[in-house]
View 1 (cartoon, rainbow, N blue to C red):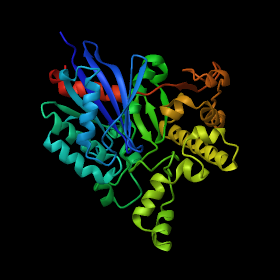
View 2 (view 1 turned 90 degrees about the vertical axis):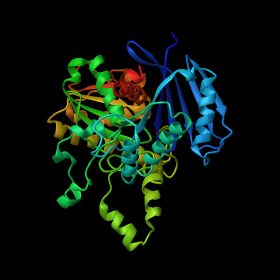
View 3 (view 1 turned 120 degrees about the vertical axis):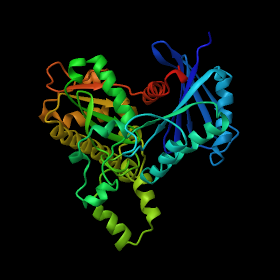
View 4 (view 1 turned 90 degrees about the horizontal axis):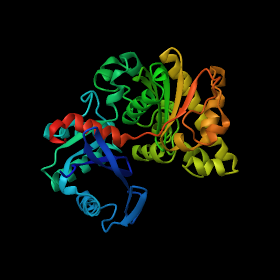
Length: 395
């Protein structure tokens, strides 16, 4: 019997990651991964499977209708995998608001609700909706499901989620939601497998990529997180500002009379590591640079990360472990070392040699706080949630 296939689309603001899974008795097993970066022209689909990697230039251009892009993607993947046996398609959707506490099967009502929530995630939500509708237009026979980044943080108490603004605004949805929940869900599961006793304790997870946030876990449950109402909040990121005095916004919009869209572009695309350094948004470039501005950017980045970990420890009532994940967290020993150095007062003792080797456990045996590096896999979580919500339809 031919094994059935599951396709996963993980849409970011400028990239789409693709997971190809085969459905087996033990659950979905990844057989390939792909990525399209919409910042580059011409578009290319990079596919990795069984230690082999290929790149295919697409005929469609970045600004063209997503239907034509997906049509090419399906054709390219179909030459390597049996897409005639696709069981279902799963999607990452950044914002589920208070409506979605877990994955859902996508029907007209769910898609409309996701669209309404676009105002809360204007850079990410439209891309997911375009993918959902393009797949539905091309293959209306395929069941689709959505997994939400915000759902994992629904366990945060109201006190944690509330801003000090009029209650009526909170009741209308202006509150802290948190993001990167699919990544944190995966890390919670992996830590429970690798170090079950530690996972039952109080853990801070640092998801450090071009977008970056932190989450405080207690027995694998989210209790607090650095991102709030939007993906701008929390620590500085590659091009996003992180937490910012709202008075700065009032000044830019009022005293300087800058247009709203200009301020939005400033905060999302021209701030963070790029803004502070004036050199690059990539921490690797900044670490290798001798420019004082590059050092300023890395110092601010790691200073704010350490400060946020201390804040999460206050929420949790202590700290037993720290986990680094995502592109920077998994691959930048210098960033991890700088963060851990600032947390020495908490009892964190880093083993510099194993940290430099990107080992799984990077703290010394004598360290009061255990420190880990664990690779995240959002597509695996989406695949498992898709199977769980679609049941026999996908299996």
